[in-house]
Image (cartoon, rainbow, N blue to C red; front, side, top):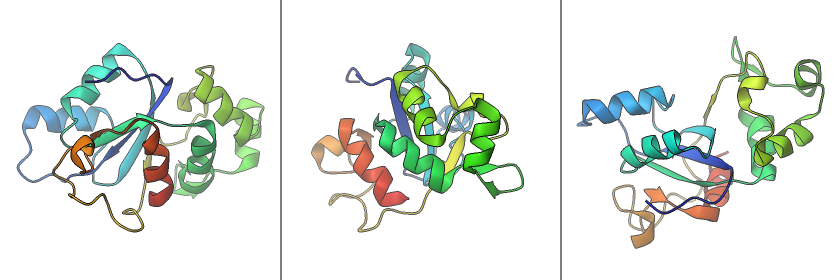
Length: 161
């Protein structure tokens, strides 16, 4: 696996459940990637890189920017009861707005767990315009959708919001 530079990594599950190895299924469940088109935002730690390396044939991953994190939080973050995350809830919980919180997240100073009650995974739509030319069974480096995609992860996430 290539060395990932950014502090925040986005992981999106691309492939489904059928015919999956039980060890890989358990790893995906630990990462809260229970179904297709789910996204998690995580810090770049050795343990997470090991988990991502294990599930790289079912997911795509890469670095994301603070602007993309802000878009994800405003459009897809959910509170218990399937309610949308609001600016007032963020101000009440972490004493800042969504924009500054997403910037702090990208710098590694904050975490999604600081927003108590917010679900740590995000439900996405299939990408507008579809996945890459070779589909969901080939690596990104060869024209498919799976594996490491570095800064291009931002484009995919925006297409899926």
